[in-house]
Length: 424
Length: 170
Ligand code: SF4
Image (cartoon, rainbow over the protein chains, first blue to last red):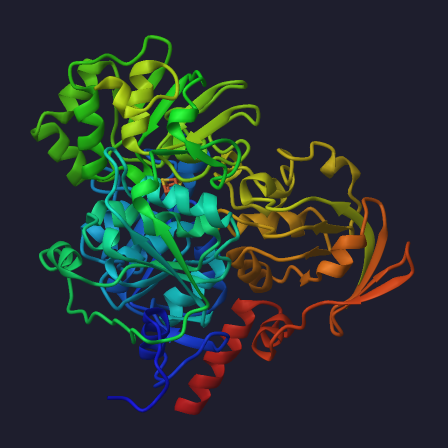
């Protein structure tokens, strides 16, 4: 065994990528990264900064992923220009993992699905929800475009080693409670800066049996508590997901079980009912059963938080043989082309269309008020996305309520915030 | 570099959708972004600010998205410095990387009111509230970040590093 002090999973991964045997919270390190990511909004700025560096190639053509997902298929001329700039950069520098519209997905649904982000990796992305990949046991974090420009050129990024904050979940989940409810409840408990700068570890008996899709949802929203990363240990569930997809060799890094952490927070998951975050902060959470008097105008099921297969199956189970309430629009967006195709093959697409819902090609679209479901003044939306800030999905006087696919689908049928139990 | 300006005071958790709404992210042009800076939480911001003015805010300033457009918009709008109790971490990196001065100082924030005049000595990390005639010490940056700041941002800093490595290799 090693002769240094024990390290947490985050510390051990960072140490392994900066050529040091040992790192501790607060250390500034220059790490080698395994994957660099940007999208149609953040890549243009990164490309401009990349140009200023005076280099004539990227550090590794296979370790950069570029995804036009936010305002695509192009919503207007300016968006088209930005997407074009990224496409031309990808061609010029021979970027292997450029995913064109029609082959793409929402980045944080796409990269894990394609086996591009793997256990033990360090991944940096010019998108705050890059932390999603903590679900596969990677250290993954969002940065700005300039950081990403430098990472594309050098394969390196500077980081401060974070403290580790461990959540321990115990108890059996109630019916209809998913990873989304666990993470909303957790953010409600600690606040939007409750994990500022920390690496979160999601652990405990409840987590041990949680599906990969639910884990990805939880890691995705670690940033909504201010965290730098939101990680899960690699177990049999991770391996079953990763092994058939992995595009390159990888090595899971567990850290030492006895390493000191800054805080341990225990949560009795059996006491959590389906959650909903009221406007205008993701931490403004309540139980759905005490919120059923709010009428709504729109439901969105999709995004990098909840546009995965498990999410669509949950929505389809509730919408099957039912109708979307005539007073609202229900927009369902699969996370990737593969999920889209499977939804068509296995009949989910038919269920959605028969119910009177929109079923579209993958895009971030309404999640950030881009297109495909922007809200007018005074409108309310129950959404499976991750942010409900003022103006996030449209007009500054619109309101976004964050919830799980089950709650969103039930609300779409009822025309108001509703519990899935109400449809049983 | 010395800074002096009037305070524009905001609360906790000013998010990146408030600083620059996503609907304007179909552009990367600093001037275009600046034209919509803060408009969703303060319609009068752009009409009232003068070059050199200072944003003072509470906890977790810049939370939310990774969009570098947020500090770019603030800088291009003419704001000289942001002082907050704490910053969201991606905003913090982005501001350093693009050369927007930011300082963490809960004491200065607690006493600064809308319209107060502050002066800031970045090298010393010293903030003076000229209206109250009172000075405060902000959290000092580690050397590594000072190097980035002195180089004028991460890109020039990296350029220097790459040039050095090339020299060493030859
Ligand atoms: S779905 Fe929403 S949160 Fe996710 S990457 Fe797209 S815009 Fe960002």
